Length: 448
Image 1 (tube, one colour):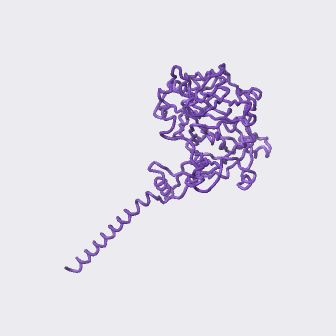
Image 2: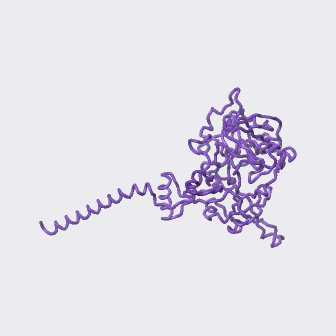
């Protein structure tokens, strides 16, 4: 053989060897990458060691068949609680539960936080003083202005006694983790997409997580973390709350599309908003009704059959095929009630039913829920429909003489407690409890 042929043969052997070596390395690495993906630990990964995420999702959700005929009234059977939902951060994704504590301010963990933007009194008059021109005020924000809030997922992590024992740890502290989609430009975005899919599956997208304590911070923690007590406006109320904006990455402001400074306010349990208007008086309730960052009243109830009947009158298109009850952000969702029968209720008692509880819980049905345009936002996508269901609500559901130009759907509730509880006012509510209507009457909405 001549030398040229031998050189070519050696070259081919070398190339073949390299190829085989590469295949061998890949065959070894792929299982390792699948089992142990090269991704950084998230805050939720650490909490998995000591806490358990609250709520029911996916196939365990009691709302997976919310459009079914099975929710129709049945002769001889009382209405029942189909689902419970809390919204720890106002206007962000809710957490579906099977049971919850009830406090005077509403369900436990509900509307503890709200986002707010710092707004100036612009435009100002020509003769305004410099002091007036420089004034800025915090105002709460919702999906009405920033529909992408619907894409901010909120997870509630509760301490798990069994996990804590294994770690030889003790804590009663619960946490919230806020997650929102975020992808950087360029190679960083490509890398974050790959690592997200390796860690959480093919459909996963890169996210940023924010860890928040559920308990109200102590004076020492407020000082150490640079939090500040400031006034924030929610509708026509102004309340002093704790601004924890130090915890917010600027990426969240950019994702939401907020051009002003973004704040995160925690309601102060010692400075809850007092509720009047349609709520029972202090003498009637045995305490002064209060609320946190809810719009107006402690709890919101929806009847699935009322929603189904209303939905049948709403024009549908490719962007609105069904009206998910979660568009209306209720706390208590009922099944088995006649459409709109709840609008005649003045006081209701939830009895144990199939819930597994042994207690009753009583509510004053304070007024109808006067709807704004927020239900136009699809809770699954954060996309706002240009007209529905707001247009149909105004046309079909202007049923309250106290709000003649607005559509109404759902009822606002105020908890009532046994006087023997004294100041320790709390109860339990759960899926499967049945409804007993103790008092009926006419509702007239009183504006703020």
